[in-house]
Length: 444
Image 1: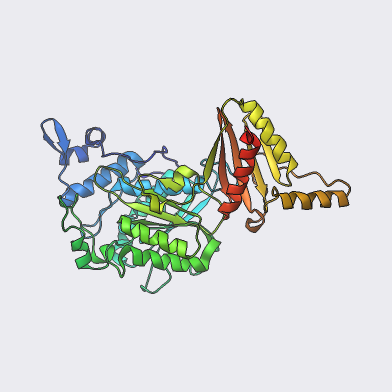
Image 2: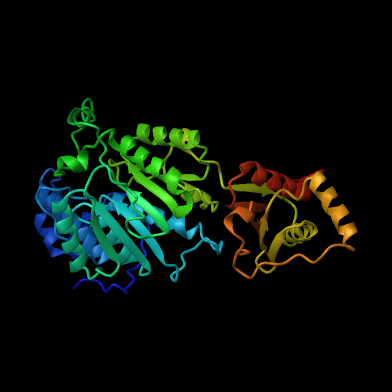
């Protein structure tokens, strides 16, 4: 029975290892029927397309309550890496909300776009099956794939939350917000063709010690496009430079580390500093990467922005700093931070029982020049006016441009963590961290 459009499945974490075939076979007789057993070890023949399709169907059925139909002549998507991509996007959105809570908000409505849904429609299905307030749009240039995708949406009772559209020309915008009559969107995702030509695809296998881990059933338009994954994602980047904050997160999967490095370089060339990267590896062989960027100021939590096994050159600026405060109790540290923040011209909320505070400010107000300017202003208006405080658990509600920096300060045993919540200026964040460090350990 297909899942209800309002039923939330159990939240699952990343796939971080190979699929447990014994566990899956115990849950699904169809999967058990295609398994082979040798020396008491269950295994499957990944070079058999029927086996590959059954594994995908069984994982979706047992782990997500989804049912799909897959044509023989289109790509059969491995589930683990696809789920890891969706789960990472969940983390991006959960840790970049205007509530600054860093956790999943079941009431938050989310709208996403999958560019190239394919016959399986796997990304919209996974996104909506797991989060009941999420809605998805999907596009594809292949009518045959779109026909199957629509069948899969209907089979799972998600017609009201997943809308699919044919991209009639390859020159049409990849992110057709205006054509869809959508003003803003929470995220865009794509799993583009990795290769620029048949020769490029063949060359990717040359020299490897082992053959591809699974048979490829993908059609040419699913595997090859001009410029490969870099060319496709560059088109999305170019469109994002025009759309900017109309989409909170632009994301894309890549097939090679070199492709990821190229895209990161392009982001930096355009001055895009708020980006995140992940390695989506789910087993011992398959390794994919994803990148996300945003023109808005909300910063993802550090473990989301720099997730998985990555090389130093692709990492974004750290969104957190830790100050060691050995020999000082959490209560004393918290009191010092609270007193310091109250002296500054900032919006400040302190929760003493949690040892945690959130600060918002438009600009640097802690430099000597800024403090001197405030002192003169206060003297001129009779001593100044009380500073407003934020509502519990919420940001100040000011527009994006008005908040130059937001930081969450958390007092822990023998250390203080400063979490960069919002802002596009790293120098401003670093300056504030320096202020707190001097107040806590300066002169010791």
